[in-house]
Image (tube, rainbow, N blue to C red; front, side, top):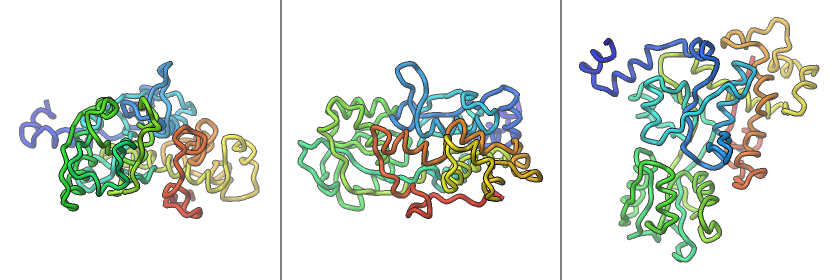
Length: 341
């Protein structure tokens, strides 16, 4: 009744934002039900998609599993809700999911008007274009008059319009709500060009009937900082989501891996001992509402950031995406974690 009254006064979007902000203590709710409900992509190879057996895998999926590992010491204590770009924010606002982890770009309007918080950037990306090789195009500046497949309700759609207008190019948008519909339309030849985050283009290319007949153009036309999203107003839950990402970065920086995490607990390095919860007087985990071995749980069950990157989208995967901007800060990249101390 209260939400309906608010909806009448403020409108549906504002009411959903109010409801999300008002329902704090997400961690208590998650612990009570025994799992994390994670909003995922409907299917993006390498980032988030179910395999033939229905098991969810990917870079973003592993983030959700790391969150479950930190809370429950069980990476499988998570359920996935596949959400389209149009559905994703409403599902989070309404409480249908606890966290959103599916290639969502951090923008000022999303951060301020939706009742949501972006707490970390776990993948730095940028929008690009993919075309068939037989189109004979080597630059996006040659695309005037082309038909372009794009997913609606995304920053991609807005960036596309801006880029073509700024360069005095004409185009015909071919718009779909669901990612799989965009993929199918491009593969069937209903448009000349596919545009989305460049990482997504490499992922989509793997699923096409003839992957070798498609090329990703060199232009990057936007900044796309991607990361997990939570409802505004629950600072504890937001802190946990942010620090799970930072913990995975920190583990990589200190060389803590799935293979050596148990051995590393015996390290003489005071920073490593503190990170893994081995100092007797540490309260870093309990201050978050977790146990003091929360980082060790994450690494043991899921791995550090580098391990997750490499097996899902890096050199150990079919995508073979270079670390680039997503390398650690001391390796020439932008991934930088605040100190765990």
